[in-house]
Image 1 (cartoon, rainbow, N blue to C red):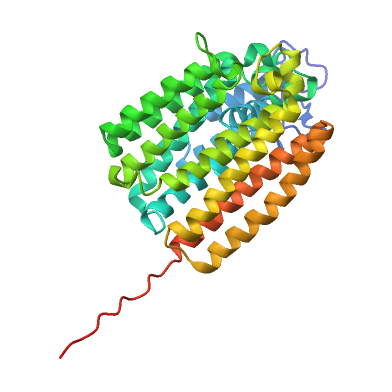
Image 2: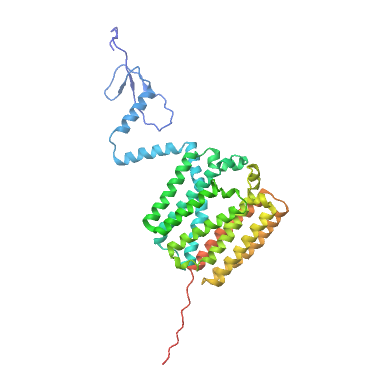
Length: 394
């Protein structure tokens, strides 16, 4: 500007745009000059700098970027979305609703064990659709169970409430219903496409039974003894689903192993879980089996069912089925050791109930079930039948 010349219009502010990362503090980003070189960007007086930055960012996002740059923008947005604490809590809440860890240590390895017992070999690729559909069905059933128990879960102690996604507020009831419905129809869709009408019908029956486990009018999980009987029926239907996929002719062949699983897991573990949650059941005014018979009697019944399942499991693998001798002996030895230690834990709980001992009894039972499933798979898939000697006659 020439000296002594009167200014007729507002001065302009010019910005030298530096490179910066999102969230980084910018210092000395704006330069106030009176002459405007072409390489600088002119900014009006009446627009705040942060608004100009926002407009420029929106303009850049609307431009026709190359494909890798679009992917980079989407990844940056996803990282920003995942950085928020509520988002992480939401995702973890959905995983807890579906009980992902249970799907791995129980459903997945139990299915593999059933296939190994019935076919004496590791499952082939043709069984993958059934495994995926069964996992989706189990996740849908677990989600429905959490929805049905939300009212009584609100009366539990604070430690248990924090672990419940719906009660703690990590996931809304609406999103939980959406998750259950999506998983159920994904399971049915896979069954319609790959598994046949028998498996589809059994899946629908399994879902119908599961809704009455946690919802009115039956609400079987709040009825003593009947809740365990209801779980046994669900386990039998689940076993029929496996046999319908492999072949209904194998129902009697795998029934010994299925009976061991029902005794050990369905009856023994469910009673151990009720023993652990007896205080929460009292707070929620529930009438469970543990409340009706008392914690000492319930833990004894859990031990008896678990020990019966261990005995049938070891006997069937070692005597009734053709398996690898080394792994069969390992199963028998492990069952004996776990039987003695579980008796020690049961005796401590019977004398005086403590949450620590009840939790140890339940969690060690689950870990032992997982180990036994792995050993059973190895015992069957590594079995090599001995060649049959046929004498030759001249």
